[in-house]
Length: 302
Ligand code: CP
Ligand code: NVA
Image (cartoon, rainbow, N blue to C red; front, side, top):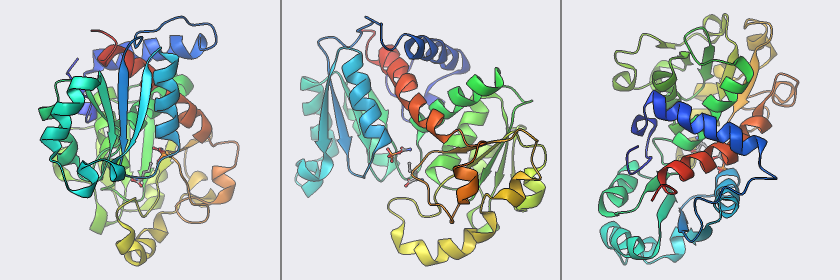
């Protein structure tokens, strides 16, 4: 494995399956496991943005693997008040910690931190990518479908350039599932991310995109850090709401995915989010098991 996990391009398909195999075992044996690959290790969790799932699943996950999680509010660190460089922060933290999990704004900042640190760095969300989320989502899809290949049809609706959409495209490339990103022209997915991936396509028509889908995924229309664009985004993405009319065009047993937090009545109607097609809490739970497996492989090996 690479030292760091900054996007889904940092692992190959073999490594993905190794992580899923371990995640399934850790999920099954959660209450009985004495697997402690992080014993004696401290993991820093740096957060510049709000979080419920990511923070809690990483804190609990490190603890369950025998390690010591340190929550670090980036705003209260020297780097957060503009008093220290990313490089100095990385070098100093590398003297104390055995791994860093970071959620921040610019992806370039996480890349710099990873370059300057000699310990593993895990991206817990940037403006551009959210790889831990999509790794857990792939695992969730695998649990339901029993396979990850082109016969598994997934649609992502809404902001085609969000961190979730970008990581979903990389998730499709990694696993081989079939993906249609359904987004308006103005926020259509990055061509470079989709290049040479015959299993990934863009479609602007929400009705056309729904055909045969087995999973429909959406995310908020206004991501953290994009609040100033709220009015434009709310109007632009309105036709891309995931609701009963869309589900009626999909495969009969189509499941609903959302990274959460969700806004009922905006990107998804309440009846879909709270309905029996929704597997959003399985997705949230799987963050814990998959991230534990990832940390065991990345940080627990030394
Ligand atoms: N899905 C997700 O990352 O949730 P949080 O923002 O609550 O961590
Ligand atoms: N796209 C969302 C995901 C939150 C988990 C955001 O960045 O705010």
